[in-house]
Image (cartoon, rainbow, N blue to C red):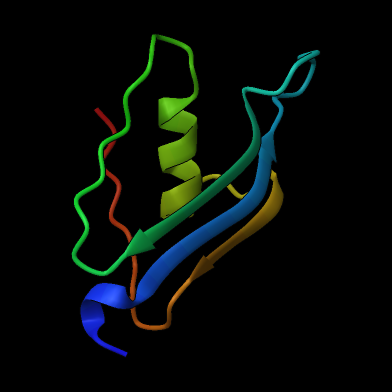
Length: 80
């Protein structure tokens, strides 16, 4: 398979609810990132962008669903 068709990251059925919250901040998210893709995440304040990035980077592991990386790939995450 050529590199540009290779899925290096996938997320399926991801749901994240913070303790004490009635509704999830992320609900049933499905994503796949291909090798070489440029990804942007847009949304209003409080919509879950930082939470999603923390899950993708492996900083937050308290969620429901599956997150999978292709071997030998990783994500860096630098908080402001």
